[in-house]
Length: 303
Image (cartoon, rainbow, N blue to C red; front, side):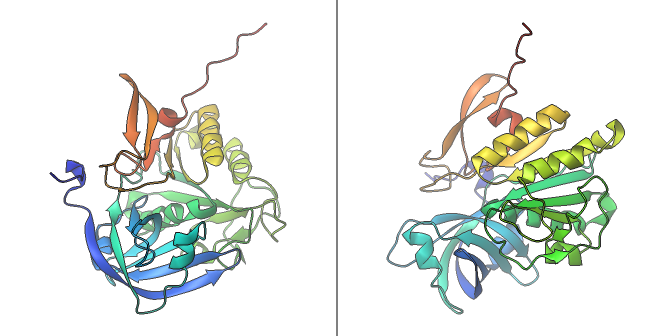
């Protein structure tokens, strides 16, 4: 019997992907481009691949997809070296072959009734936000207005540029932007406590709060928050969305063994209308409603 959940049986491909190039950025960050046409044709924002890092290491690594181009059959991945597996992956060179299983997982579901799409990415959680923003921009008739806020406590894995896109509601001097998004006309801003020029000097969730608080009720009613990053950041995003009364979707990062729903090694407890339930991050997620993962805390009674 297949270990793949029935809903995913026809969406996950196993293929030999060819390394196109790999670019190293500061603090052991890498952007890897692969020719993986089956994955590229199926990938949606929020999906990930389970990649073999080295022939001598049978355990694959789950890595978020930053871009997928069905026309060229390419996908792009951002990762940071954590452990021997990803260190081995950093040695991959142009022309090498890597076994690629993907795309895997339930991605983000953009809501056209709330076209102001606020995307928050932290660290190696940035890729799904870039993927989602660029996909929304490809269909202007849908009316989405993406805003991408990216945070990092180390240098970003790209060369930031000053933005020429005006964004009311943000602090003066917060002008550093993602170069590719800026070129596409997608507003973006950066946040960091590492003293990066033009970036907001604080957490990315604090920058998001400043923008949300600048909106009136009518504008706020059009916002959905989408986020991916470390757990503390995701919890802060959930609490921010709850405080502002807006819906939020978050993408979780968990260790995985099989990544196709068979081993149940990545299960988490989520809240459902029927009560608490265990869900697999790999195939039931990685994207979940923020309230199901971080239920709203009850109000503290007044003394």
